[in-house]
Amino acid sequence: MSTTPDHNEPSWPLTLDHQVCFALHSTSLMMTKAYKPLLQKIDLTFPQYLVMMVLWEEEGLTVGMLSKRLLTDPGSLTPLLKRLEAEKFITRQRSKQDERVVELRLTEQGRQLKEQARDLPNCIVKASGMPHDALRKMRDELITLRTNLQKARIAFD
Image 1 (spheres, one colour):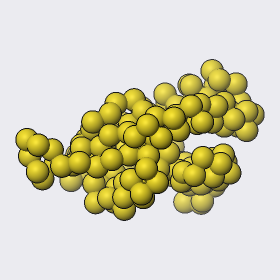
Image 2: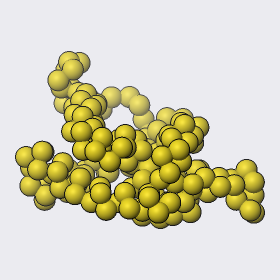
Image 3: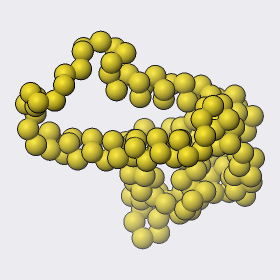
Image 4: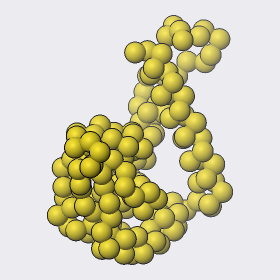
């Protein structure tokens, strides 16, 4: 993949408000702020909520699998997972097949938390002021952007 500019493409001014990266970054900050009071009611931070959503989908994942699913470094998950374990939402156990591997399981309290969190997405949809279809389309476009950036990163490495 070439990193030289395509002179047939229109250039974007080097100003903050013209940058897609800033629109994504600032929107991400606002999204996290919108979730904060909702998550405080169920004693979760936003990163913890993301972990719990993955585990509500599939239990018994390893830390490595969770890290891959969340597109994050496994080492950054350890303190977060310790807090979730201290809150008795999850357990962390060494695999019987390979003691280097840590498996994650929900506790009963962690499973019950899913019910308490069930309406959070609807609250965020309402706060967005946008219809479901527009949000789905935006999500799909962001996933495409993320996938393309992942491919480009591989090409740049």
